[in-house]
Image (cartoon, rainbow, N blue to C red; front, side, top):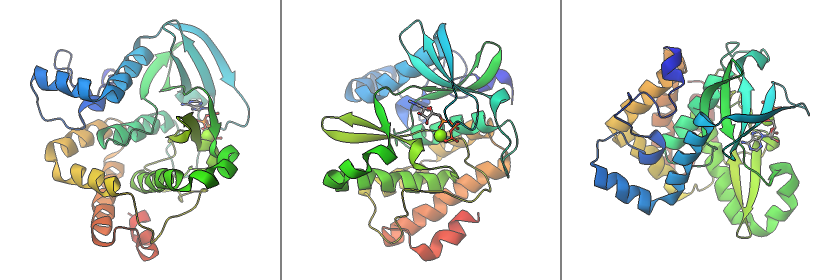
Length: 288
Ligand SMILES: Nc1ncnc2c1ncn2[C@@H]1O[C@H](COP(=O)(O)OP(=O)(O)OP(=O)(O)O)[C@@H](O)[C@H]1O
Ligand SMILES: [Mg+2]
């Protein structure tokens, strides 16, 4: 893996065969008019593609270190194009048990790619970029949000909507084996009277650390329908799987990548069979 491929925001395509991973959910070749149709049909993905470009090309206007309770060095960066991002340089990463030191920024990007290729859409666009000579992860800053622990009371009146989002986060965290989903790592944005949840700080993933899901577990509970569909779409689509595998291999080691795909299969089978994740399957899933 080389620096050039790491810095390629849209994955491992060469220049000229631009096929943004955020825009397709599949690496199958499509003609130009299909792409155009998709963009018209899916303004959300077009917005995401633009955000990735803005993060990649932005000229730094200001950079401020956030030092309230952060474990790693975290900077809020403003760009002259109006975009802001959260930058976490590799050099500011703290040592963590069971995670190779200096790899958190790659895991942050890997978690984003899984979210993008599986069409989850709740991890803010995230790239790897050098800023002031330091390589790190750069994630789109989502303005006007509250951490999940601050909206728990309000949540009661909108229980179903939020619960479905949390269930999806829970399964996503099982898929990527995220060991750091505490309530501060879920940002809540108010959209049309409802809260839209964003999963941030996904770096402690694809590892062997114990899982953490402070919001609660959803064992044996019915899961949102589209969740099973997203997993089976990845399992059925060989091109998409190969594309995602290649992208992840630039960021993680082979064992970690194969463990991810083994979890996809096991969790996919479990949901197909039970439309839930029984507690009895937890150890098998998390011990992969
Ligand atoms: N994409 C984002 N949009 C808006 N704010 C963000 C974003 N990412 C991070 N933040 C803010 O920056 C803070 C620190 O970021 P983050 O949680 O990623 O860092 P950390 O040091 O790894 O934290 P932790 O203490 O959870 O391990 C968050 O609690 C949040 O307030
Ligand atoms: Mg955090």
